[in-house]
Image (cartoon, rainbow, N blue to C red; front, top):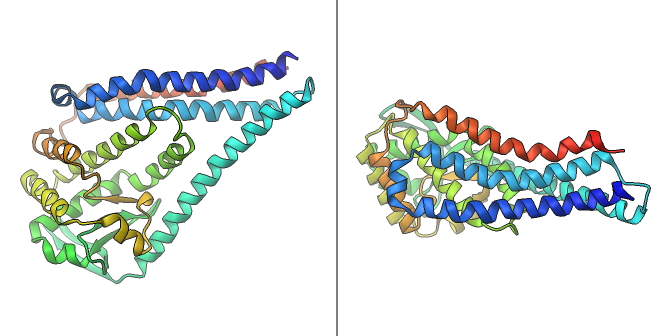
Length: 314
């Protein structure tokens, strides 16, 4: 009887731990991100590792618990209980797989739709860049796809911005390509959908989107002037009416794009502008960045703890 009860207990304990982690971390991070003093005191790297850890650990803990139960298999004692925990675990992992497959399919379809648009070589301040030009009635720029995303720009964006501003926008999109943002956020997006019911998932997701854009902005400052980048962001946001509906109407999935003007709320726009103008150059790395990542990996490694129960299974 104990092995069967242990499986059910594992599921309940894992769920409780996931919820408790979020309840503890989200209010703290909310205070951190709302405080202008803390925003300037800590680097983007520090903010990123904190938000990523808080977002990842709970869903990974649940996934590892389900995987451990499947590996141990259903118990023969009180078969209905053992089979119930086993089936719930299979369904949970199956749904996770379906979500990732769906997002991957959206990325593939979006990339194919972009490739149908004519390619154009655009001269920038840091060299010639090839981009697919979309016939959209809005200012739009994004990396579209999964592993090897394609740069997509709208006709209106090219016609509206001057050469320096267009170079700034493209430099930002190159930052997304460098960090493989569309690929990694595909996996993160699957976790967001899988555990949307956990406390703080929506707010943490928005913070990660913001920090993703701030990271690409930071990358762009290596190649373009900070003031020009900030000016370009303000102009694009002011001209953009409804990029989401227009892009979707053109066969692009916003879930698999990294858009220059996302997110665009007043508070998040202000944070991006402040970060562009005040953040140190990307080449200036602090000695604490490695320790921050080590601490983040240690925190995320706790999500593997359920796998340690496998050798104890009888």
